[in-house]
Amino acid sequence: MRDRARLWPQAHPIALDAGLALAVLAVILGNMFVGPHTERYDASAPDILLAVVGSAALLLRRRSPLGVLAFTGAVTVVYLLTATGEGRAPVAATVVVALFSASTHTDRTTTFRLGLATCLLLPAIAMLFGARPWYSAENIALFAWSGMAAAAGEATRNRRAYVAAVEERAERAERTREEEAKRRVAEERMRIARELHDVVAHHIALVNVQAGVAAHIMDSRPDQAKQALAHVREASRSALDELRATVGLLRQSGDPAAPMEPAPGLGVLDQLVDGFRRAGLPVEVVEEDPGTLPASVDLTAYRVIQESLTNVHKHAGPGARAEIRIARGAAELEVTVVDRGGSPQAPGTAGGGHGLIGMRERAAALGGTCEAGPRTQGGFRVHARLPLAAPARPAGPAGDGRIPA
Image 1: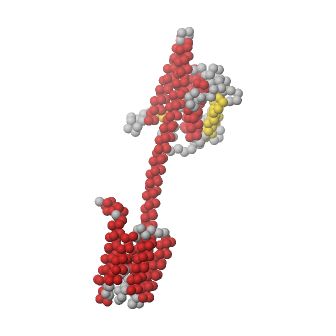
Image 2 (image 1 turned 90 degrees about the vertical axis):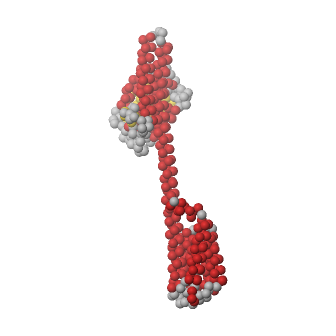
Image 3 (image 1 turned 180 degrees about the horizontal axis):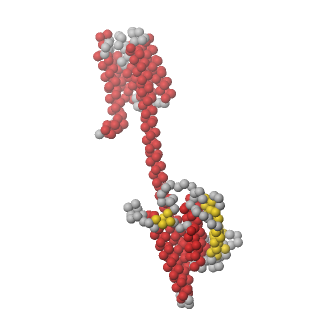
């Protein structure tokens, strides 16, 4: 009920202005017939007509505030010049209301000029042509009411501007929060997609190669075929474990709590390299001790090496061998994976190149770079530069460096 009463004037402005005009007319007529100067003042038909015309003009105060102010001012001047007796100036109520309305629809400078002109002009006419002395209460009241109308209009306009600014800031903040939430959701979706790609591409490539080897030598060398199948089983089990850990990121808040396991990093690089070596890819590691790394840098370096070795294994062909170089500087970690020998086919030419895109995105997320391209001597080279002081990221699952299993 209270909200309806507050919003009613905004929904019915014409009815509000009509009620205001009637109220002003009632005040003027009451002052004419019931005021303290009634015995000395006989309201004539022209006086009443001026009061009615001036009050009726207030119906247009929203559409043309300056025009209504000028019109009511002219009506008031005519009234001051023609009214008889001592009880003058009741029609001035119309110009006071018009001045208030004009002040709420103009700027501060215009309000000051309009208020100053009204405060000086109307009292001056009343003092010059009135029967009472210039210091009479009616003249002073006319000056005071004009000044208060301008001040009240300016205050109302400032209040409306303040409320509008607060509402606009609130709407902008709400839009910003929604955009930030959408951005974080998109970043998290992209991060999970990269994790799934890296896990699936790496392990499925090993499974594919070992399964092909087992099928090829199943009849002639069954012992080696069994060994290849054992590698397939190990790679598939590792793929399932990593997929389970990555998909655990999608758990809802009401799901059973899952244990937290550290994300893979350079600490388990030897296991990654051994897997490729068992799959038939010679890998040489030239590593300086990187020491303790930030979790995000450690994970990104591991994923870059994993994806690079997977590409070498899938695309380099027979005779390929890989070399891994890890060097830590004062401000960044450099990771280089080189395919020495093998075919010149670029990784991802048959599969869309999502792995290379993912590596670049991972490095860019840390403020680093990742360059990949063929070597003039043959083969392929991936070089990543990862700043050790990674840029701050919003708190949440995307930046804590840990994956729920």
